[in-house]
Every structure is written in C-alpha cells, then in structure tokens.
Length: 526
Image (cartoon, rainbow, N blue to C red; front, side, top):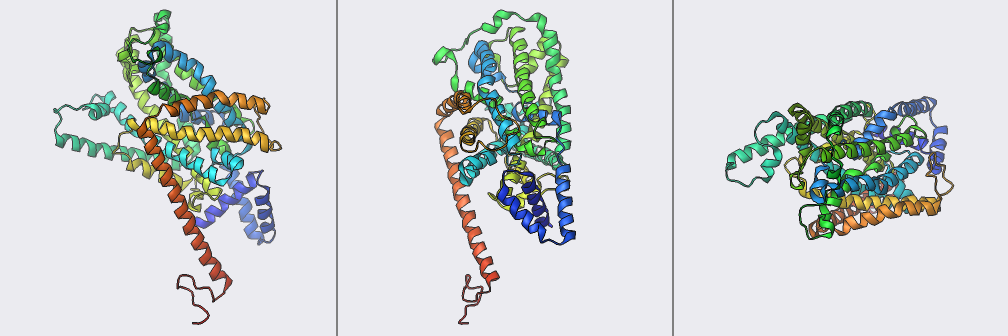
C-alpha cells in the first residue's frame, strides 16, 4: 500500500513539474504500455493530486506570514539590546534589505518550480544534487529544531495568563533555593507530558491537511493581532514623538552602545523565512497568480505587524530600555488601556505560537516530501495521507519535537540562525546562477530586473548575513560544525547501504549464479 501511494505521488509530481522533460518522457512511454484499467487509475491519482491543491490567496498569505512572524511577539529584545531609536530604525530599514529580496526571489523561483521541496529544488537545479541535499538538510535542521520552541512558549504564556504556579521562564532562570529538587523534577515531568500532548495534537491537525491548517491560520491571525489593533487605536493619542528617538541608555562599550550580536540576531529571526513559502508553491490553487500575490501581501503584513505596535508601544509609555524583555508588550497594553487588554495579549501570544507551530511543521514536512520525490532521502517520505499531507514527514517532525520537549532552546536561537544563514546564501546564489545558466526556463513570475539588477538586489542581504555569521559565538560554530559532520556521515552511510541493496537486487534479477551476494546466493561451483 505504501509503495502504491508513493508511486502515485511521484507520477503526479512528474506530470506537474514542467522542467523535468526527461522524466515526463519516461512516464509517457511507460503509460503507453500500461493496462487500460491501470492507466485510468493513474489518471485518477493525477486528478486527485490536482484536487488536493487547496491553498487560496488568504490561507497561503497567512501561512507564509506565520512562517515568518505571527505578530510582534518576540520583538521586545530588539529594544532591550538596541534602544528605542535603533529598534525602530531596524524594523523600518531591514525589511527592505532582508525581507523584500527574499520574498521576490521566492515568488520567482517558487512559481517556476512548484514543488514541495521548495528551496531544495532551486539549489539542486543550480548546483546539483549534493548541494541541494545539503541545503535541505540545513534548512530542515533549523526549521524542525526551531519548531520545538513554540509549544514551550505556549506553555509559558498559558501559565502567565492563568497566573498559576511558576512561569516557565522563571523556572528556567531562577537559581534560588526556594524550589526544592522534588518540585523541580515534578515540574519538568508534567512540562514534558504537556508539551508532548500539545505537539502530538498539533501534528494531527497538520496531518488533516493544509486546507485545515490554512483556515485555522487565518482565524488565529485575526485573534492574535486583535489586541495590537486595539492598542494602536487607543494608544495613538498618547504618543510622544520624542520617545522614538531615545538612544541606548545602557553602556555596552560597542558602537553606538548597541549590543550588536543579540540585536541583529533578533532582527534576523523576525524578518526572515519567506523562502518557506516555496514549500507551499505546489499546493497553491494557482501558482502563476495566487502565489506571487500571497508572497507580496505577507511582506506587507509582517512589516505592519512589527512597525505599528512598536511605534505605539515606544511612543506611548515611559518604559526604560532595561524593562524591555520577552512578554513586555502585554504590560504595555495594560498601561495603555486596561488590565484586561494585557491578559488578552498574553492569550493572543499563546495562540500565535500555535499558528507558528502549524506553519513551520507544514513547511518542514512538505520539504521532506519534495526531497524524497527528488531521490535525496528514502522514498517513504513521499507518502501522502488520505488528506494529501506528507504522513511520515509530519511523524518525524513530531517525534523530534517530543524528544526535545525536555530542553530549553534560548541558547539555540543563535545556532538556528547560523544554519539558516547557510541555506539562505545558497538560495541567493541559486537565484543568480539560474538567471545566468537557465534563462530559457518559463518563469510565471519574474523579478523585473536583468541579471546585473538581481545581483545588486541580493548583495546587501548577503553582506548582512555574513555579518550575522561573523558575530556568532564559538559554541555556535562548534555545534553547527558537528551537525554538518553528522549529516555528511549519515548521507555516506545511507548511500553505501542503498548501493549494496541495489547490487543484491540486480544479482537476483540477472539470474547469474556466479555472483555470490554475501554468501546468500549460490555460486556456480555449488
């Protein structure tokens, strides 16, 4: 049954993907010799795959929005490390240097290669299978590990909203002796149980299909952004413009007293990941029109969701730089209007984290399915459920998240950014390379620039990405290096296993008794 499902999924992809002409020839030639009933079944499978494209404009827009942002939750540290003025300047300027080039690249390459593998397909088309596999591995490691943080954040916001027991962040950071060892172990156990249950439940929602996830994401976005809409309306009359120009008040000894490493990492964390929309391009109702429009709208939503709440939060209160920390927007909402809005903000933050989880898991699972379609990883990841979702990709992602439920991820943020930087540099290089080496490819959407213009467009974000990587700590470099070595070793082991398995199969099919396969097949002398 699994093989039948994978073969159906593969044939539908081959038919849909126009640039793989050689594979289409193989499919058409084999179809001509098929039994008419089997050929009819194949056509039904192809039609079923087309019918599974259920992402319209708004569901696709919100999925990309949640893959990148999900709201202004987490931007507080930009003010803490850079001050009000540089935080506002960063969220005003950096979207044009980071977000817009990435979204334009994704709109062009995603509509050209409407595959579940997304950026992996772009890199492979430009630089070959090995580079594509490396880019996919780094992107999946970054995405899957990043996704494990959202259930933990959901728990923290939930406990804060209910005002029950200790907040998760307090449990992690409090070194006092007031908490006994037994209480700590009990907390960690129930925390693991809760996070595991939440992860499995959300994984099942992904299993039910992108239509469910997309519609749910639209609803979640309305709920999670509503307190900030109210805050902006109520707080606009309280804004004092001079607060926007307040320079950092904390001495760091660095240029302009900005703590550059966490400041830039926070901006990078909040303004990137538009390339995850490439994993959904094949699921869009119309990859030629709906998909590019959704990418552009998601950029506008991300910019607005950061800039307007930050302008009001900074301008309407006298909060000092040292008071800004994760969750402080809820306090500001309470100061601007009333305590109920602060509580609503905390609940909205929890809901936003659920949306981030769903969007990230969908992108990661579809990426694995696309990599399997391209023969990079075992074909079992090509299987779709009856809802059209990549079954084993979702199962693997959920298992990784459950396994990491006992770990705290604050120290991994920088490492995740480093892994993603590597992937993004490969994607930009692929974008330029395909413009040069494959100009004849039909591009449903094309960035209105020539090759020189495209190089000029991607140069500023690449320079900034290198700067973020240079600022990384020694621990980040060691951990990332270890993961690269592990990935290379696993790839070599898998390739050797598949090579041995292929030789054994060929020996059996050839009927040549002189080939003794590890003592299993008889030799001619016997």
